[in-house]
Length: 111
Length: 115
Image (cartoon, rainbow over all chains, first blue to last red; front, side, top):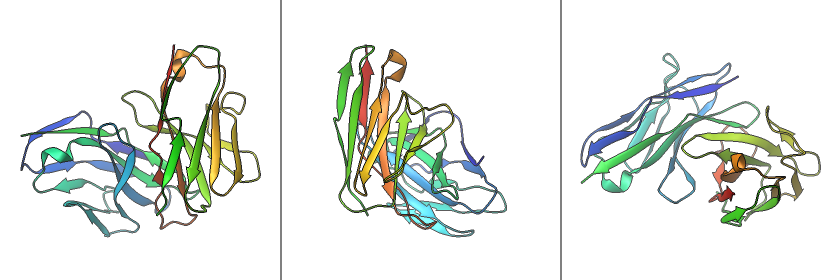
């Protein structure tokens, strides 16, 4: 079935650093792609999405581009803040409307 | 968008008992889902809650262990039956509209600890 792979391990970086979290997917069709964020003690929130190839999703300074040729949807932010500390999940939406999630990456931003 | 609430927000239960989690959406939605998020893990889909019919379960999840109801378009329940410590997890409800363009919205989750 369809699946999502995120880079291994937590990410620790300093405030104002550049953040990249890698996400690749395997799918038989053309899924919609999402990044969800889970702040400490809170539920899952949609951060951004892209529904077709070459679409760029953006929100709160985060961006991700749907790359069909590399089956990727990497998340980037140019200058992170302490408030960006959270767990980030990449996900794809399958044809039956179900979401498949990656394992998530914990991001810790140090002042 | 949709706002989703869950009750209870957390509970501590004894082995062998059952807990029913409620999920309420503030608008009518086509799709409702139940996920499990075990400590430090990603989300795993348990089942799709179908309005007016039996839920559709994913591999590894069965109705006897996780009975689900969905009596209307805005409400669903998940029961975790005959609990064991391995069921300790966060259980999340999500909802969305059918179609490829729309995202799913998630409830805040129910944090279950089984002793």
